[in-house]
Length: 292
Image 1 (cartoon, one colour):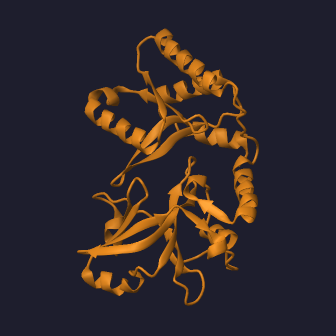
Image 2 (spheres, one colour; image 1 turned 60 degrees about the vertical axis):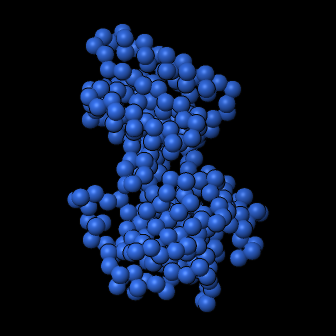
């Protein structure tokens, strides 16, 4: 996806919210830095199946803009909890609020102050966001990987498919280009497995409640749990519940424009079973492929 197509898509996501759409378009036009990468409706995991959406976010400078409409004023306590969760999830984020006002002049004053602050943060930085930027970032990682043979959680690399993880990192071969199982053994009789982890988001109307188990992960990526519906289903899956199995874990998630993909979240081992819940603990945040 080239830059123009990307901008059309992300700014169209707020077309149904007139005030929000006006504000973010004014800010983008006012900053005038084509190296700055904008994200609208940025997904932020709040934990326990909850999430928040930032109205406008610039990840290169870790700067967010929220447009306060009437619903924010009605429940200030819930809004504060939401923002506390965002600050906890995105370390060091700088967040500014645009308050809903009656006069255009007052709104413009708020917008111009934020434009100046963003421009100051961009000044002196060589922000690069060119055509095919996503592909280039991935190719640059692969080039680096071929020499280091390592991946770390902090790399935050987006793998579009399980196939990219298995074939490009672990050098497996799969002619179909996909993997049907979430837990994939690297080679026969090995205790080393790739785990394509998918977190369950459950609410009262969710079909996820009908699945055999629910997956959760803590915010610090240290613990993963699988809670089974019945003890019989837990027993059926028990062959993989052993401390001997090393799980190289890649979590499924959506990136800033809603594309599904996977990112490395660490190396996990079985820790314990309590009631119908299986616990896995992270013991490393990197993989050294020279030692596999």
